[in-house]
Structure formats: structure tokens, C-alpha cells
Image (cartoon, rainbow, N blue to C red; front, top):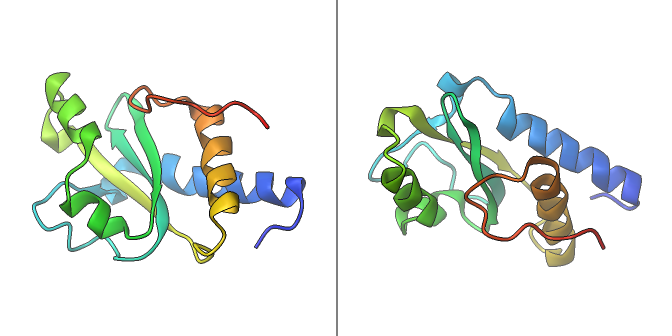
Length: 125
């Protein structure tokens, strides 16, 4: 668990690298059950094959977040994206017990990327 701002920035960069730069083909395809996505806490990205990051979020259960539906899928449908061109990148995280830390990690990643489907991008503290 990061203890300083520089460690927090480094961890956010590692998470961002994991969800933004993994080859698209290695990201999780859309499905009804999302059984290939772990039911663990994590940060995730909804990505488009050519347009890149569409949405970034955090959740207590990666699989549960998607089996219950997700607004980014509706927006992708409204924007007429082909479902074959939208996938999910996930990064499991181990310290869900520290909500402030998770909020800050997510905020750092959102400020760095500004995905179009995230309605609010937190400002720096």
C-alpha cells in the first residue's frame, strides 16, 4: 500500500499502464456472464479497439460490476460502436479496505486520461 504521494503516483501509473496498454486482444470481450473477469476488487477500463479508453472505474467486484449492467455499454451502443470493438481491461487491487486511497488512485488515473464516458473528472486535491 502506498505511503507517500510519489508512491501513490507510481502505483497509479502502474495501474494505468496495465489497463491502457495491454493489447486490445488480451482484454476481456463482452459477454452475458463475464465469467472470465475475476470477482475481486479492482480498477477497470472500458476500451474501444481504435478510439482507446472510453471509461475508467473502480469496484468491489469486477465481475459483479458488469453482470449488473454498466452505463458505458449503453453509451457505446448509442455511439454505434460495434460490440466486437469494445472490451474490458481489468487490474485487480488488494487494498479495497482503504477507500480514500482508491478514490485518489482513480482520480489520478482519470485526470491523466480524461475518458469521454466518465461524466466527472476529479480535480487535484
